[in-house]
Image 1: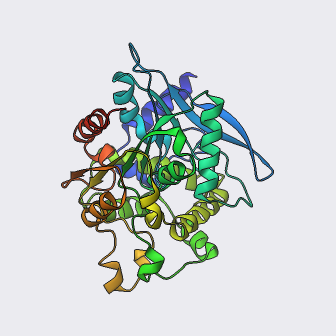
Image 2 (image 1 turned 120 degrees about the vertical axis):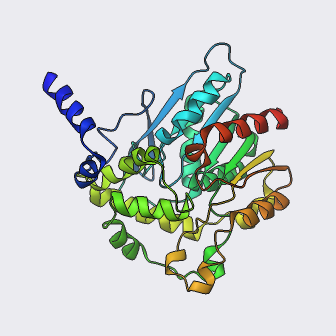
Length: 336
C-alpha cells in the first residue's frame, strides 16, 4: 500500500509532458479511474446478453425537493464528467442519477450488440424502474441529448422535464451531404485514438480553439481506455455508436416532444460528426449551434431557449458557474 501511494505521489509530481508521453491505462470498463461518487451496478439482460450498467445514485444534501434528475453523458464523456453538476443539483435538493450507457465508460462493452437510441433508452428506463423512479427530469448533453430526446419520445409519461445541453442530432448530417463511413472504417480510425487526437478534436470543435488544464482529466479518462487491455472492444463500441449517432438523428421528430424542454446552447460550439469527411462547402455550414438551437426551440412545442454565446460544446465543463446558474434558473422558471 505504501509503495502504491508513493507511486501515485510520483505520478502527480511529473510534468504534464511526461504524463502525456505515458498516459494512464484503464480497463475496458474504466477500471482504475476514480469516480466522484460510489459506482453501483445494474444487471440488465439485453439482446440475449447479460450486461452491467454502471451508475451513480447521489442523494440530496439536506432536505430534498422530491425531484430526481437523470444525467445522460455524451459520446466523449462519462457519468463522471457530470461531477460538478451532480454536486450543484444535490445541494439544490435533487436526487441525482448518472448512468454510464452500455458500451461506454464503466459499463459493459458487448460484442455483437445492435446499438440504437431506442435500445439505450430502454436500458435507462429499466435502470430507473429498478430504483423506483417513475418520473424524472432528464438532462442530456451532446449524444446524451439525442438519447434524452429519444427517451422523452418513447416514455413521455416518465419525463417531468427535459433539458438538452448542446445536443447532437439537431441536423441530419447525412441529408446535408456528409458521406457515410462504414463501421469498419470508423473502427480503423478509433484504433488510432489517443490523448493528443482526443484533445485536438475537442479543442477545435468543443472549445473554439482554446484549452484549460482542467480539461486534461477528461481527455485522459477516455484515452486511458484506448491505452488499456480492452482497446479493441472499446474502439469497436465507439465505432458502432458513431454509426448510431450519424444514422439516427432526432431533428425530424422534435415537434413530437411533449415534455417542457429547456435548451442550453453554447454558441461557440461547432460539433458536427462526420464533417471531417465532408466537402469543404458542406463542412463549413454544419454545427452552427446558435442557428440550430433557435430552430430547435421553434420546433419543440414547449421549449425555452437559454443561449450561452461565449461557451462551447461542454458548457458544464468550460464554465461551471455560468452553466449551473442557467440550469437552476431554467429548472425553476419552467416549474413542475
